[in-house]
Length: 475
Picture 1 (cartoon, rainbow, N blue to C red):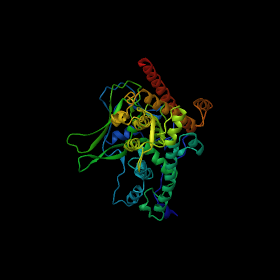
Picture 2 (cartoon, helix red, strand yellow):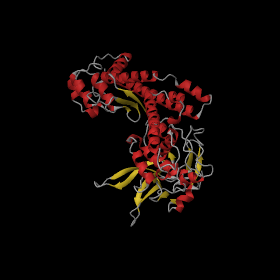
Picture 3 (cartoon, rainbow, N blue to C red):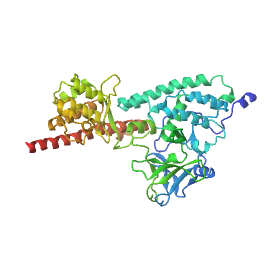
Picture 4 (cartoon, rainbow, N blue to C red):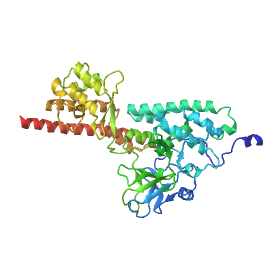
């Protein structure tokens, strides 16, 4: 027995490679109760951390970075040398890496976080890993929907996100079997995870750790002069929380005479004492924020609703709006040609359209409605598609046409709102009763979706009133 134990590396300071649903969104436990000091580790490895940068408990997002004193604009906040970020780099001479690389090649590109997640799991299972001071500081749990109960996944009440969550869960269950098949019968020296069992839960933990913390930055220079796009985990930098109004940004630069790339976080403006350090994770909808990061942004200006462009749905909406048009289900050939140009018709159309977000109404949907609600082919053909797609182009096909288009979109909003089983007041009442972390996130998510729809309806109703008042004045 003693000899057998020596063949498999012992995991003296590791917990099993598993992950459960989060108990607390704002204070998740770290992998070990008392992890090494991350700031000291970065400095010891030749990195830089501004003396005023400290780790603190953020009431909204959990651990975050805060300024303990004033920091002038343009100051370096954190600098990481090239060897500190965790990237997927395989060593062909390493037996364990020779197993990890083929496994990573089985991961679809859209789930790139799982590829780097395999490397993260490997390092988590490795005794004496260079990145252990970083990995030990990672949360033990994540609040992303793949860890929700079946009931809370249903509580999202939004088909496009339900589809994505189910797709990821299905992938993890299938990938678990693939990994197990590859790992069985391996020699201990070949096992990439130190002989530990890997299941859908541990794979989900790794994928969530990467999706919520990794940045896609420039990698090696390619022959055509551009740089490859490489996902990497940036210790300490990934503790900067999100804001659409950030006070810091990430830079990549090389020191003079040093070919190695440095990754920096720089103050975009003066940062005052007690201010959190904030980066913009991207102009994303709440679908992505919840799916990849495990939080929901209230009043997110980039949140939107997805609809499927469908002639029968448009007919129903126009009838509900009191707008009669026979053209939605059976457009004239010239209208069909424009739908083809909008990629809403043809052999491989993109029928996903959105309302909400910066555009308010996706240009392709607006142009399609304007065109199909017009019988004046000559007038339509006077305008470029870019004009017909633009909400700022006020009534290019006339006031009556614009009012009909807006009323049809308002009716689409009413139909979309009707697909949610609960109203916002019901949701608010449920939140007041006190619910679990995942239930709260699911309710907040669907409330924000309903708010997007209501905001679009209000905006377009105002526009209709303005158009009608202008028409009355002109008359």
